[in-house]
Amino acid sequence: MSAVKTIGKSGQVTLGKQYAGKQVLVDEIESGVWILKIGHFIPQNEQWLHQPGVKAELDRAVAWAESNPPEHSDLQALEDRIS
Image (cartoon, one colour):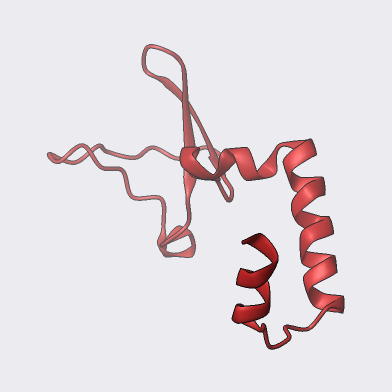
């Protein structure tokens, strides 16, 4: 589908209410030619969490935490073990 849109004075283009609040990836493939893709994007400072090795470790840690409920810790006994 093609549509002619006008870029407003603030540099914005309206795509329609059905896209309100959506994240959009904008690729400028050459000057004046853009490709817009709707999607969910991972912030740069969280991308390390999605690397295969890290993701596998986190999945194992979450599985362990789900099957091992927290217990009361005897802090004095722990302190005695390290001193």
